[in-house]
Image 1 (cartoon, rainbow, N blue to C red):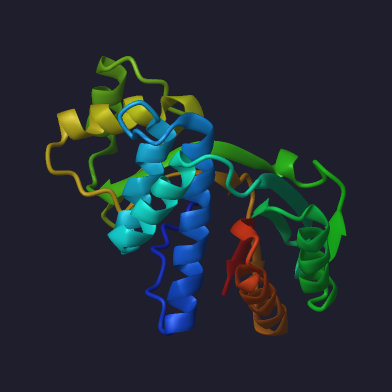
Image 2: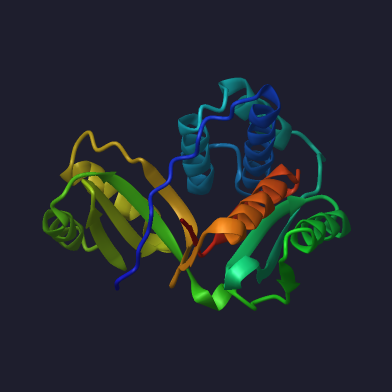
Length: 239
C-alpha cells in the first residue's frame, strides 16, 4: 500500500498537571465505555482493550477502578461523542475526537485552537475521507512474511503489513482487532506490542518544517490541553 506509518510512543508526562489531564481523559473514556457496554471486561471487549491501553500508559489502578465504580452506579454524567475536522498549516488535515457533556463548549474550545494557529475548521467529512480507520499493532521483528503467513493461517483479514527499522506494523480492519491480537500472540508468544490501538491513519502525509511545524505543534498542544478532547489524528510529518 505504500503507507508510511511512524510508530510513536506517548512520552511520559513531565508535570503533575499533565499526568492529571491524561488520567482524566482515560477515566472519562473508560466510564463511557463501561456505561454503554457493561463493566465486565470479559464481556465488554472494547473496555478490556481500553483498560489494557491505560495500564500501558501507566494510568494508576485507582483511576480505572473509580471510573468503573462510577459507571456501575445509577445516573451519572451524560457524555456524548463529538468529532471536528479541519485544515492546519501548510495543507495539513486533522480529526479531533471529543467526549463531552456540553457540545457547545467543546466546539468553541476546538474552534479557538484552530483560529489561533493558522487553521480552519471544516464541515463533517471534509477530511475524514483522507484517513483509514484501522486496527494497528506494532512490535519488534523483521520477518513480515512470517507474520503474514501466521495471520493468513488464522484466517484473519489484514489490510497491510510493514517492516521498518526492526519493527513490524500490522494494519487490519477495526472489526479484526481481537482476532489479530490473539493470532499474533499465539504465533509469536511473548510479543510485546508497542502499539495496539484503533486509530485513523492518513492515506498521504504532508511534510512540514520551520515555522509551519512550530505553529502546528502549538495547535496540537492547545488541542490536547482541552478537557473534552480525547484524540487528535493528523497527516503531518514534522521535520
